[in-house]
Image 1 (cartoon, rainbow, N blue to C red):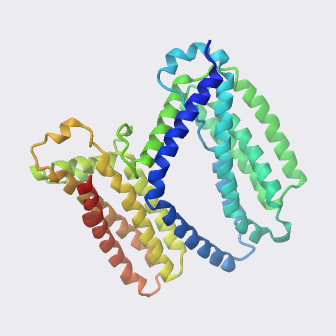
Image 2 (cartoon, one colour):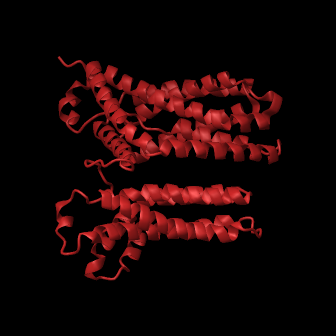
Image 3 (cartoon, one colour):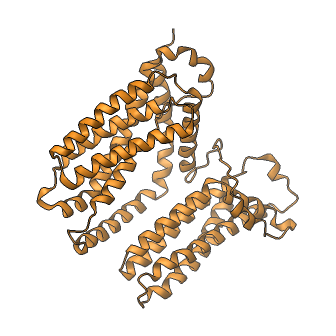
Length: 404
């Protein structure tokens, strides 16, 4: 008879062993050093912001928004595989210990995120609340309890067959979290907050018991696990080759049409191929997210040096992320027999990365202009954008491609 608890231990052990093996590549890449410098810079501008921010400014709504999204979101890590649809599905009645271990594992990781976010917003919270601010530890414990309830709710929602139903239930949890957190971060542990929390738990108990009567949606859990594994490999792939990475393809006709403008000649074979990859893969989503974050961060910074440094950091992050473009189709046989020079693949990757970085540098320059004050940063930013884009793509990235 299969021991489901032992099965869980085997699968979590195999994943942790693989994750630890990849971690040394991440450490050797210099990412940790970069994060340390980024943290130091962010801490400095954070302190400057607090000095200039009026105490009456309603920052509690920003804190509520951040925590409501964090407490509501998140996926349950189950480590299920395709074959489990055949071999484990008949054992659903005995899978309780396995799935409880999954919930605990997920909660532990999410608890770390809650702790880090509270640590990040704590100076902002105490600056706003002053003497009426709650203590750190009780606030953390309260948020962790709410997160545990949300993780349990997330698990029960995975039983639903329709995506719209799961989204509606998640939306309901988000509204409940906003209601409770709004009272907490504006008034503290007052009677109204305790009543709202009690109602939150009462509704949650009946809500979860109702959903628990439905069967587990195994196919959906396997799909979630596949996406989470793909996300993990995509992250690791930025530092070391991961041959078995699973790539997602999205249509995105509006951006793909721009790639269709590439001249239809033999030398542009790989340029067309990798242009389509950029437009239809997760790389484009990453590119958009980094650009939006860059616009917000650079726009909020008033110091000229700060704008220039943030501008350079965002471009650096984008270049590092886009360098994984070289891994696409690397292990596909047919792309290696095209009747084009072998160096055409490298040239195409470099060209696509360079164009993407130039486009981003132009967009980010809009944030550099804010608040439209004359300064040397207005001249140096384009130099940084064009210069770094060229050096990274045509020098650093090309050298890395030649070494591989």
